[in-house]
Structures are given as C-alpha cells and as structure tokens.
Image (cartoon, rainbow, N blue to C red; front, side, top):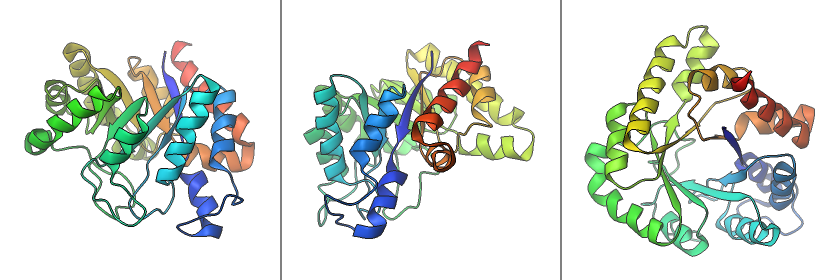
Length: 259
C-alpha cells in the first residue's frame, strides 16, 4: 500500500506573501490548519522543506507541526533539506533543525543555497564520506532516514551501504516524459532502481512533479513504492477542488494501482 505525504511548502509560500520572511501569527493560510485538513482527509503525514532563505516553510513551522502531530497522536512529519546547509539569520542549519525537532522521517536532498527546487539526487560516490556520519546521527535521534537519489541502481545500493532506511526516487524526468507521451524509458529506469532497493532491503519513496495524470501509471509500474510526497500539484488542484477533495483525489489515484 502506497501512502501519501502532503508537502505544505506552497501553503507557506502563499502565507509569506503578506508577511515576508517573518509572517505574523495571523497570516493566512495557516500551515497548521492545512496540516490538520490533509491528515483528516487521509494523508499519512505532512512534508516541509525549510530553506535558508525562508521563502516558504520555516523552521518555526517544523516545530509547530511536530507539536501538532504529537498532540494528535498520529501522522508523520517528514522534513527534507540539505544537511550541509549553513546556519544563518533565523535559520539554524538543516541538520541542527532535524536533531532539534526529531521528525519521523528526515529526507536528505542535495539542494544548493538558493536553488528553486530539487532537481537531482545525491552523487553518493562523492558524498558518502560526509553523509555517513549524518545518517548515523539522525538514526540515533530516532529519525527514519531517506536519501533523495536519481533512479539508478548504483545510487540505491550506495544509500543502503550508508545505512539509510529508504531512498526517494526523483521522478521529475518521469513526469516530463509522461507529459510528452512516452515514459517507457523512465519507467524502466525506475523499475531497475526499485528492484535494487528491494534487493538491498530499503523501503522506497518517490516524489517530484507527480500529479493526478501521471501518478496512477507510475504506481502501477512500481507497486513497491511505500510513500509519495506531493505538494505543488496537489495544492494547485486544491485551489479548484478544495484541500480535502484534492487529498481524496490523490488517494483515489494511488489506489488505482490495485484495480
């Protein structure tokens, strides 16, 4: 069964439009209210990607959602970002934030400072030496660790060697190929990576540019995906459907894998 985690960055981005880098407590929309709505609608959890420039999700949001989920007694918080991002004004550094908040899942991505969005996975042949201690530290903190990788079997095997619990396959090129009318090559790449994950004993996440059009065929081809993280498309659909109905639509798309 594939689970849905909803990325709330775009909710935070809209909120910040009126409050800049330091939105006040009355700024709308409210990220915590959105989190409750998606969880009530059936999502397994919520995702945030706080960046140093504070353009959308904030470290304060991570703390607020951790407290909310603890109060609810259910739902997972997934925080994603680059563990090597430097601390700065009103930003503690992502690794420090993870160790402070202790989310259920820490998804480590190789974003550069100021990068618009995640667009590639880790080069684990180069980064293994400095990622290994981070993975160990986060697991000692009680976090499930997922590494964001391109759909390449070698990258998946290297993630397992580092002690990661999961990998998240970068699905951007799949989504673009699907929109162009032929995603067969990308599906083959992702199947090979999924096979490598299974053989290595890793659980499997996927995310980036997944939407109602391309999600069913992706999960039909890769039924071993444990979790998809979706934000941009779901929040865009929520502008027309409403947030609760949008989550329901994505859950229905996920369940088509079983039909």
